[in-house]
Image (cartoon, rainbow, N blue to C red; front, top):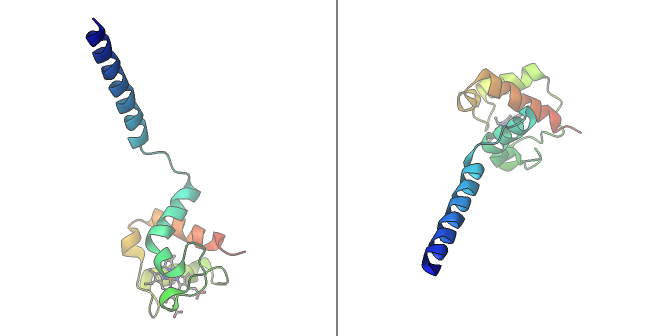
Length: 108
Ligand code: HEC
């Protein structure tokens, strides 16, 4: 009887834990701002840094950049000097727009 009880408790605990895991595995909904930031961290931060100021491989400080949206799009499409073109990596027009929004948000 005690053994059955222990077995029942163990199964219950395992079941509860697996439910917790399921919850963590569901992808949380990102806000557009979070998505922009994540794209930037993924594709741009290696050279520009999360705050845009890193300047690795001669990358410009994005917090001080004064380029227009059109000029940023031009650089994303064609690259510039040590910066490779990024649009193919970003994949969609939506991602490009999100990342440009993030670049603008780095200016203070
Ligand atoms: C391999 C390193 C590297 C990566 C990755 C990179 N950049 Fe750059 N970026 C540079 C360099 C180097 C420059 C300076 C180009 C120049 O003017 O000579 C630059 C310049 C820029 C500029 C122009 C700033 C100004 O005021 O002149 C923008 C905007 C920019 N990057 C945005 C991005 C974005 C957005 C991403 C990600 C999608 C990105 N970069 C990824 C290296 C990188």
